[in-house]
Image (cartoon, rainbow, N blue to C red; front, top):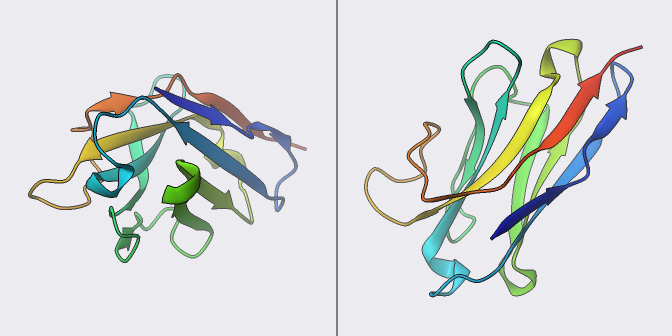
Length: 125
């Protein structure tokens, strides 16, 4: 199971930190990559970060690079997405996802094995 938390309403330029609690995996989280995605109304689901199983590789699309920071704490079975300098166009439902490590590594497309239910992020003044 994956459960997201930390969403809410924030003004433009503000920050939020999303958390993703992972549980019930057969193997250690050391074997899973964690992705964050978002989906705005009428739009396709978009990958906003992927962090490798070790945490040594992190990928972002250009739309969030320099503003979003992904991290993970395998000891706490938790992934995080720090979002700074938020913009109205960042408004969406944000999902975390987990993927058993395989090639290609650390992807931003939706080929993940497990998904959370999402948390709403609204950026508005």
